[in-house]
Length: 529
Image (tube, rainbow, N blue to C red; front, side, top):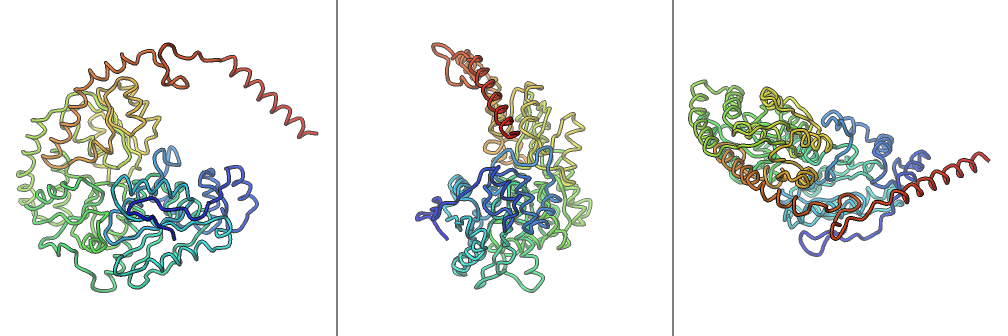
């Protein structure tokens, strides 16, 4: 296993990884070279990779992913590699080592996660080539790397992740030892052709960890969380949220005789036990299907939506109280304490303007609810995540307000909504923001400027409105920018404008097209001979 010399640096690639283009990969698969998928590049067509993975014994894994994370209208992500999500979860956990098995280019790109989030963690990498993949030596290399890493003085857990090529080739991480020297070993497959988004990849690892922790707890006593056990029944919060939000939620839950429990994905292994040892689970982000399955296996009730805005907070406290068998007067008291403050914050920071909203974090519907309660004219909410029953309360509320909710939204749908509704503000992914600014529409990136802020309680209402209003108020700057760059070329002529935009040479394109048609006819004639 190779490792960087400095914390957080990209791993050194010890051996070059030969990859084949899509046509070569298809030919190799058709030839049924052992094992299935050996030698394929990660850029091979997803249907070919998927077929190879099934032939290599990964059908059960892919079938479960298809059930947990249904695709459509597109069958592969339009954003970053999904392993970005599961890698991030592991890098944020104390005493957790991360090892990647995949094409060298993929591993190199994914180390961006450790740099971007300042994890300052080594990302382990087990390199391979066609020979080690075909002979099965790659699995042996992974096992040796895990044995070398399994130091209980440094780690509680080692997470090994198969990327596209090892998954397609059937590298059997499930055959790794479950424990070495007291260090837990967890192997997962996170292929781009099986897990649609990076958000759902977080659930792949969180669910695997919860399952391991649940089975440990069923066998006997387990470690106490670093902060100790809560003196009241807890509500586990499922989904990554702003660090201050659990404190605000805890204040809302106090009148119910409840406390805010751990946030899943957790920051430490022992917190998984505390997360399982709860009264209720709040599915703040509704796409954690595998995690919900583990909580339900542990006998826990899962409640959807979140305490967002006045209506959302009231409904959520009712649902949590009912699930935890809290008396009606206590629920009424909790609502009376917090709802007026949220209403006052919304009234103090009203949002004025037409907005379209899209993202891939899973909290898009919650943000949409808060915007509407703040006074925004919200027309469209798109999320890359799938529809689940835990988001139904939010979807029903938004649709009742006339908002179009699009699950598994594609970039094309997000852009079409922006063009149709001509908003005063477009909140979205990077390409949506880029397209909006080109049209002179103020826009902000959902992940960095919206989801990375408080969302719940009075603090959430004020923080969101401040950001949104400031951006809408900058419309004049966008108008000046559009006017200044008027006449500058776009597309093939992007970046040109002074003194003139290059003329499109259609006659050259036509001549080249005729040449290609002629060559194709010539090849066809030769094949017939």
